[in-house]
Image (cartoon, rainbow, N blue to C red):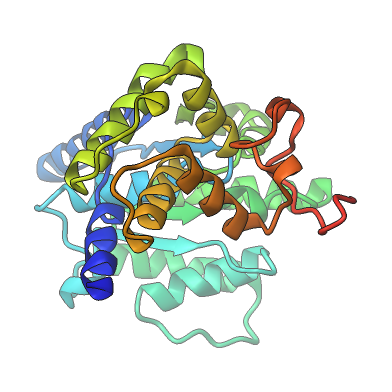
Length: 314
């Protein structure tokens, strides 16, 4: 029975919930892809553009990009083991330098990097590989890491390198940049880059703007789990606590809902109650009741993004 529960929860976690930012991302990706393919078919040079998806940690940025790409059944991806590779996705490595990012990109394109090469030579070869493999888009996840904590000279080199990919006359490549709102600092630093980036933002969730959506998600997941929901979980007070417990981030709200449902199923309880969410949050953070947003009276004062010791200290 326990294994069946885990399989059920895995299926729930595999579900993708569409939202406004995802629809904007998908629309922009489809548009830029169609423009690029039309230019290729017409034999025309085409200046590539970029899409930037920003949001706080836990908002679901990476999942949204992955889903937008996977929904295009006509794309040739690395997993297809073909010479053409229309979209390459990499996470910006740590430490994040032009050299390490260029090396990771070359690896993803199937080239074993010679580590002693300079960043300039690495990116020169990467641009050549992008043309050889007819790559249309490069997705850089956590793209802000390549720009932050750098001096002015290094930042300029980052921006110029990204522009050189889109400007390449032999083979322009579009960019998909996903990251925290700090990514906007890089975009705003260069007017040429700014005008070629279409920004999509995953905004924070609030009860006022998304209370009904959160309630619908909760009831939908509970129904799929064949769990009755106590009436108090439909009240405004609980929904506000649920949203706060997830730091007002869409992805974390879904995770918190699923953790509560999982707690109920594993405990073999008859109905979904607030206690299941309180216990799920406790297990997640090892917090005392005073710092549990499902139990504390003044729950809004709790900083749910921080882990506290058992004494409640900083």
